[in-house]
Image 1 (cartoon, rainbow, N blue to C red):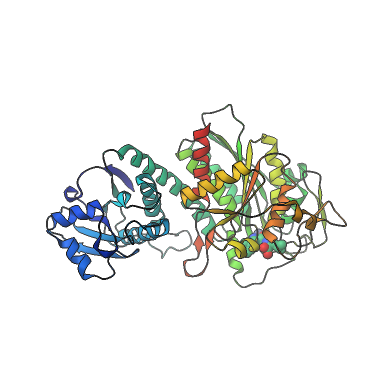
Image 2 (tube, helix red, strand yellow):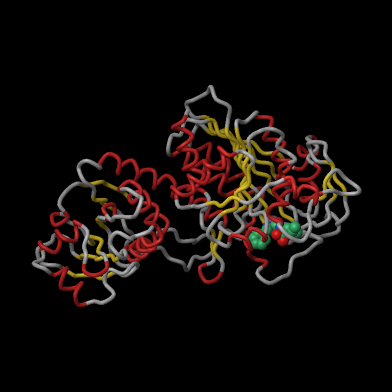
Length: 497
Ligand code: BES
Ligand code: MN
Ligand code: ZN
């Protein structure tokens, strides 16, 4: 899709579909008022006849409206004027995006940046508009040839802006497109079946970054190299699988070379059966999404490059399957991690922390100024927060504030959960330095406590995305979260440096 930011009067815009916002009780955005005047009152007529018009998520179309150059005028309801919240705005945007992609619209113009969303501005609206349009165009086709993209895809989009806002809105649209390109890659990787999206596939996908952009370098280690590096915990998870595990290391070097890097560590379990502590079979297919942390690291790095971010970024992805079998790890096995600490593996289904602990230890080699790990780590986090917020665990108040702020700004939100010493004792083992599970409750926290043992004094945050990385049910599929969160965090960090 091609985007332009235009300041023309909406009545003069030639396109297949022009979208303007309306509110409940007949109230209109400035563009809708202009359309009402240009059409001799057709807009207010429609609003007075349709009870639902103006309510959030409702769309009403006027075909060939006299007085306009657009072939179709779409009146998009955003809710009560002055009370439009982020969710009203984004849900309506999704409806608009779906409608525009569905029928034969090739050129569209949207006046969505002037909708008044409480606490937001034109740039925020424009960024979200581009994100919604791009995400709605995503169709998973790799293993479903019958899923056809629209016959006449949306090709050119004009975003209406005031003259004063034009440059800022243009920048916001570019940001939206960049973030979406990362999200869509993350979604694609998550949606791929586990027989195709293997650790080796993830390593090859990571390598594709080098071809796109010379600021990337990528390497990966297989089983032999992991043995050489004493990554006993990672290897313990991988040993039941016929697939070769991969530790994938991606470096992005922006223009600022003086600062220490930021490390992003993503859980890449391409299929989690639970291992010998096997999971129940219902919905086990969804454990192909257990590499969404890894996917979000790749997506964020792609977005960072598209945005020309200045930082030095290191992505570290431990990728493996977690399978049962004659060679698989047993509950009770004790392994030695790369850090030297021993772990008693009491439950082979708590595998994410086992691969992450060796990856976190590896991240320390880069002397990063901060580490963020991203993992579909615990069902307990889904119980606590559901699908709306990712769990955030950190000891650093500054980092906590920055991630919460980035979540609010991107509307890809996080919520803090405790990482107190009180819980650490649950990881005591009679036979090793650490057990890999805690007691029955607070499983998201005890998992985070386990990871905390491997980062030393380096500022570190852990994001549990088990509830946010994919949709279940009818619209099953990866969401692309938390790419918007991480990208916004990096954009803000770049402003500070
Ligand atoms: N990948 C799962 C976490 C998960 C579960 C994500 C359900 C999304 C939905 C992880 O590897 C896991 O199995 N965790 C266990 C830990 C337990 C054995 C301590 C869990 O959450 O049940
Ligand atoms: Mn598991
Ligand atoms: Zn898992």
